[in-house]
Length: 279
Image (cartoon, rainbow, N blue to C red):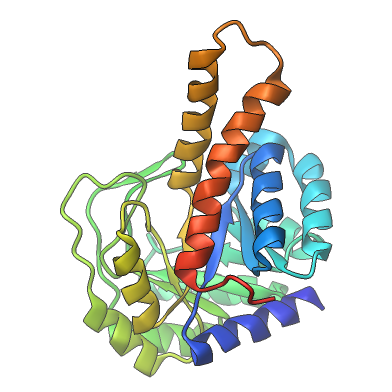
């Protein structure tokens, strides 16, 4: 089963100290880029999509595309940041998805555990990711001011109680474009790695220097979420083409330039995570 392969691969990342880059997609073009670059680099990657992107595209449409992607040996499909149980259950039942997230980080500690356990029971053999603490910044249509770091003791209890497969702590990054000074807590990552034996997920990697991402991986992060930079590079390529060809109307040519621009950042992130040639 694909989800079991994903589980084993993530456990291997803990032992061998590398990370899986997790790239967000929001249309066919972005999906094509992520798959093509992963295939060319012989790298295993996570292709993930959010609740709002599924709503934008339509579940049946994107599900059929992701089902093809999930059949590829090196692509794992993940539902990213979802707060609606109905969507999570739908993705758990779909052959397209290997894993899902249940995000109840804004709820109380007790409610977060209760809701996460409910989804974990529905997951059967599929992987479940969950979050503890509050990551500041803007993600999709959600804006959160400030961050609340994850407490190590609570994290240990949370993972033990919920039996989740991936754990996303808050360690000083933020969603979207940073407005405040970054305060990454490497000691916290190290402490979490010592206490928790499942893969750790890093949110909000935008703007982190390559060396900082590498330090996070060395400290114990195993899944690196990448979203905003993909959109930025896609749009840069789009605008660059239109600036030179302002009368262009063939979207295949316009999107071709946008995809080429996005490819550069996808390959770079694969290399930073140490995932190249990891199939």
